[in-house]
Image 1 (cartoon, rainbow, N blue to C red):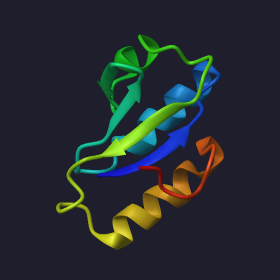
Image 2: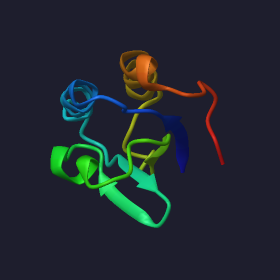
Image 3: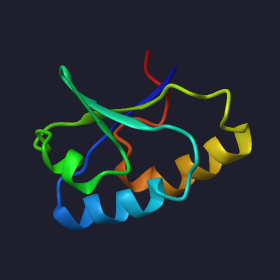
Image 4: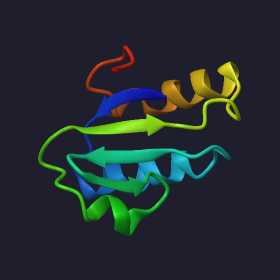
Length: 87
């Protein structure tokens, strides 16, 4: 599993983020505590506590090529709290 901590503090950020995530065919989740939502769901993301950083998780990395992952990370760089993967 690949994890990155992100921050989505503004509604416009959520819209931009979901548009980016929707371009990728692999599964991407967001986790805030015990709550997990699809990173491609605007309503799901707004159900999370966005006042704190949340964890982006890519569980199905076998279907994502390294090039796709790198491109995705470049696109979401403005939202990353830390650019190194978490555990």
